[in-house]
Amino acid sequence: MTPTSTASGHQMPTLGDYPLRIADTEDRFHGNRLVYLAWENHLMYAAPLCLPLPPSLPFGALVRDVLPEVYGEHPEFEQIDWQRTLWFDSGRRFRPDFGKSLDAHGLGHKSLIRFVTPALTGIRRQLAPGRLAF
Image (cartoon, rainbow, N blue to C red; front, side):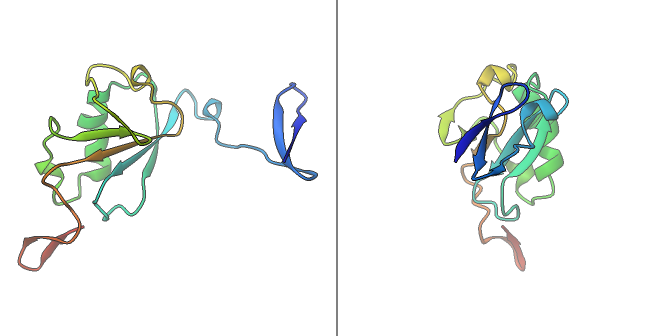
């Protein structure tokens, strides 16, 4: 790939004579950032979910308001002990401060927030006869 200058002077990568236009930069999301969320070992959600979230969103609001909307249908969700949950930012372990914003945690555009819930294994765990968690 070779870089090409745009009219505004920005460098844009190209593949031969075909310019690659990045269409999901942060400036295109009206003050929000794309944030990926993944609940480890819970394959009812086969891939990380991607949401546009404001950088000023407190981490506590993410847990209290956002996560129930996207993961609340899972049969184990109500059992999560948020104080014991392990958090990762694109592979790096961190301990969130529920009063600080996503931005204050260094969670930028396209960050991947993974969380592990000890004792809730999800995968193939039988909840009751004939009822499985994924």
